Length: 149
Image 1 (cartoon, rainbow, N blue to C red):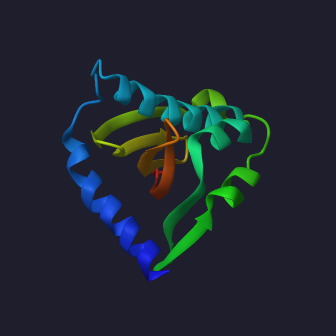
Image 2: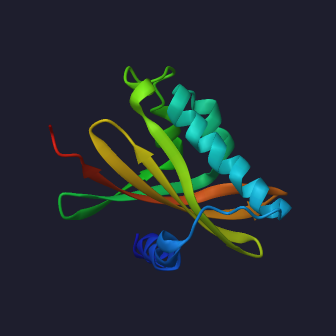
């Protein structure tokens, strides 16, 4: 558990400078391949189809978040299994975007924003290239509720 937590903290530290960067407009084929994995992740949210998330996440992926004042974890398999199989009722009001990607060799981090009617979620993804494909191996996220009108 401590090892997983250390990995999560390393992802946060590595991704922190990304907040000030614009989305990549690189013609680098590796950046485009990273975007393929991230677009699968976003499509999974938009459609509720777990197949998109399976295409995005590595089989050993884990998710970390804070619940109350405690670090909580969920396996990627559990996350994928929770896909509803259909879009959310308020899908038309939801917006998602890749804010930044930073890559060195076969390791990358990405920052994603999920802007929903009641909250903005920020995801920080750690990705690795394995078997010729980029896969999300770790996700940490936070949720900021929106003020009610």
